[in-house]
Structure formats: C-alpha cells, structure tokens
Image (cartoon, rainbow, N blue to C red; front, side):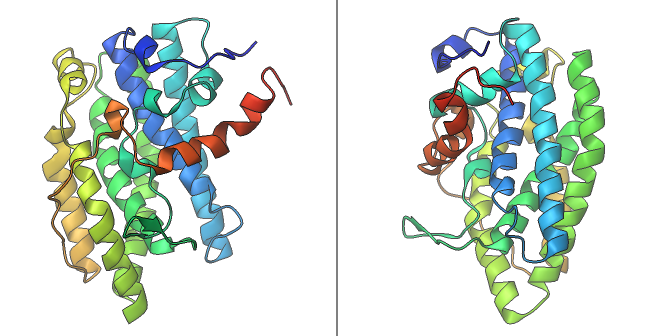
Length: 274
C-alpha cells in the first residue's frame, strides 16, 4: 500500500544526513525529468523529441535509485513512489534551477510557448555540474551512492555532450537563435549560485566522506561552461543577484504547478496499480 499521507518537511529533517543529501540529489533529477518530459511530442524535430525523452528517463532512473537508498536509510516502509508523490513543495529540496519552466521569464510572467534555447541552456548548466559531481561521488563512503554515481556518470556525460552541441549550434547560428540562447543564459545563470552555495548539510556529508562540497567543483564547471559559451559566440553574463533557496525547501511560484501535474493521478487514486 502507498504511504497515502503527505510526508512533511519536519519529518524529513529527522532522517540521517546521508539520506537527506541523497533526497536532495533525487529531487534534482526527478524535477528536471518532469520538466523535460513536457517536451514529449513537442520537440523541435523528431530526433530531439526522442533525445529529450531519453534524458528525462535517465534522470528518472537516477531519482528512483536515490529514493530507494533514502528509504533504506530513513524508513523501510517508504519507497520511491512515496517520496515522489506524497510530499508537498516545502518537502522537496531540489535546486530552483530544475523547476523553472521551459520558457523565458520576463516581468513576473512566463511565455506560453516552449523555448528550446531555455531548455538547452538549463541542461548545459546542470549536466556540466552533475558530471563533475557524479565523478567525485564515485568515491563516496556510501557504497550504494558510489554505485549510483558510477552509473550516472555515463548518462550525464552524454547529457553534457548533447546540451553543449546544441548550445554551440544555437549560439553560433542565426541572429534569432543567438539572441534566444543569450537571453536564456542571462536568465538561468544566476540560479547557479544556489548550486555552489554550500550549506550545513553539504558540509556535514563532505566531512563524513559521503559527498563532496559543490563549491569544490565550481572551477571545473566554470572551465567547461566558459569553453562552451565562447565557442557558441555568446557573452558570459553576471551570476550575481538573488540566491535562490530551493534546496532549503523555499521554491519559486512554478513548483506548485509542476507538482500538481506530476502528483494529481496518484493522489486522486491512492493505492491504484496499473
């Protein structure tokens, strides 16, 4: 039987630090997978429709493995579905970057049409970081996390190569594609500050050998992104400004709508199997 009761953020604060850290990683993967899944049937060309779907499935697979491990460390009666479908937004700890819509943000509104450049830039920023994180996490003292990392490195390397290729293609393409890519980079880049802002959980897990500090891979991430942006003939914008706090459970206005779409069937029919 499913959990069928909403898991509170307070309840999750009592779980061991390694479990909370892996819950954060799983949330990143799940929420970005949900966003990429919105492209199903809407890709700019058939090949990219399939590529984005495959990327979403890879991320979903990572989330499932991580949530399973969280259940082993946290509560044996909870499974991957419980963590995905029976938490409200304040009990999710993903980076805000992952929940942003696949469309430009402007003046407090979101464009109605999907924008492929926005998705490409987000995928590039995320996958470039996670490639370095997964490589480091292969040496985690938690054997399950190390195994998940070893599997995820291979997938994420492709995600980065695919996103980088399209970033260059759009940036060094037509005037319109260049402008769209530049605008997406200006809007998305500041959200990366949160990713490198080490909090108490990051520090505890790194100290115990479970993880590494996100800030420790920032230089490598910057080198990869600067190389790609330069080849794309784009201008590197400022990362300064408001630091989002999604990994602390404080989300953007977009998160509630995303979860409503993702969780509606399960919550309407708890216990259903198909």
